[in-house]
Length: 74
Image (tube, rainbow, N blue to C red; front, side):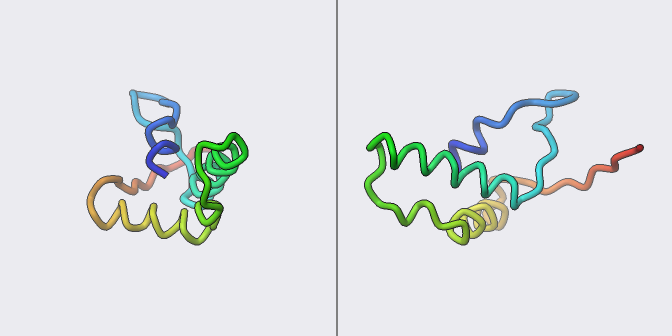
């Protein structure tokens, strides 16, 4: 999860692009799958989407990440 968060691209004003928590969890899961496939990680438990979402929630509770409401104008 941390590698996914640190690798997020910047959008306007130097802030990360807007992504929903579920999308971040899926990206972290995809990264985990690549790391398992390449042999960098041996434990397939890291592929659990529940674990990804729980880790993001824990990082939020610890104050390591923030949620923002951003308005999208169409």
